[in-house]
Length: 602
Ligand code: ADP
Ligand code: MG
Image 1: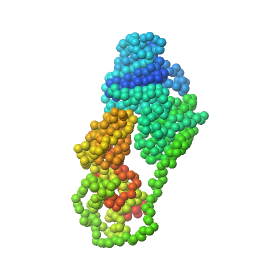
Image 2: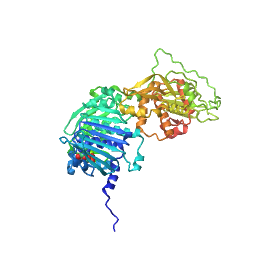
Image 3: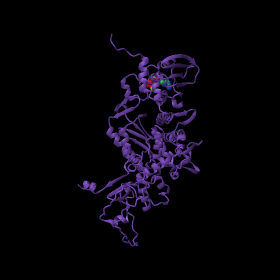
């Protein structure tokens, strides 16, 4: 007897479900898209426990007949395609007829639906693909799907789900993508019975603003270009409002959200020279292309498209955006060239420049007198305030490797007159013994602050937190508000205390010490870390947040430092446990000595 058997529909549905239904967000996406395909103008989504317990989508679309309401759960049952050719001219979202079969294989489903012109609708109840009940019922026109206990019969998948916070973030992302593509329809999303989004029909601009917040209105640059190859519309963000996260980037091809690295690159190219490195602009770009000239390869969870005229579309897209940014006079607002040039402080012409008076003691050994008590980095930083200049003389004595005898250097006067100086307002150059050390001041500051936050205890009881005299309101879109509010207990234990505002957004009550003047940056960075969602354990979270606080609190990349500040920085850095790298693992300094210079010179 052969060993090949045909899998039952039940088993193959479960296997396929793994592909189509990765997480609650995929269910939300499929159901919303079906509602759009059914011509609904009003789509209402409710999730409970980030979709684990319930996902409900109610639409006012065309509904299903009694037959269709059962057929729709069969694999490859679709009303949207009959031959493979249709794929290319697809106007609907779904076409594979797989979503409902897959969803019903791994959940308990209740469907209520009624077609226009019929008096009674149908109710179908299924559990793990097995149809339980089918009744005639009275219900409103359109379709209501309730998906309960997702993955109830696949515990492995259920356990694989991330925290509610992460799952909800994915749900919001899918919801936003569909809502953004259809500004003419109403969409509502509720999580645990409170409203996250309630979007009324309107223009695309209104939709973007409704999703991201009213302050986005002034940030948008409209796009409108029509060529034989492609039609471009939508909005891009002004470069000055770009953020450090990628979250706000949407590309649609013929109304379908896709990820297209090449087109993303075209958009980023348009921002070249006007965007600070590491920043991401917002964009919501719609491309319309003749469907016959796209090769759509639709994987269950991602959509990829290949355009016949890739290169042409690339150039048109880039120049359209470039022109748009130029027209709105936003291009020249930033100039990064200045950062690269050496800035020399002009000497007033009436100033007599004195020759430095230097007393040299040839027997002086800077390392000999070193006090051997190692001071903690935090004791430096408490008195070290780069804003106000209250600087304690730093202890640079025992920093670096202690040498017993220091050879006389060839130009001792230049060394003694400036043990350290700054180069390009960025690097601290210092000579210590036989070594010439080049320190990136910002990275050094990050390392110092990082260890300080970890040492001082970041909690509200620790020294790491500072209560604001007046709580500061921060305006945020609802997705960001949720992220922050859900993490608020954790954040509070790390010195950032906040409360949700009834009007939306949050109110900041305390901040990590030293960050009172940088609350917005602080919130942006925390949101970035939250979106990243990779805080494994307590220790990881502590380190990540300390690094975020240090990042926010550190001096800018270029900043003129006084002698005292440089001295304190050097001292602080080399009292750190790991002075060589910043909290993100980047090198803080580099050391040259005669040998390494010989090697370089060859
Ligand atoms: P596809 O969307 O790829 O056709 P689905 O499994 O998502 O496959 O849906 C199967 C079919 O069920 C659809 O083709 C459609 O006829 C019907 N259907 C699903 N959702 C709805 C809805 N909200 N309103 C009306 N019909 C629906
Ligand atoms: Mg579908």
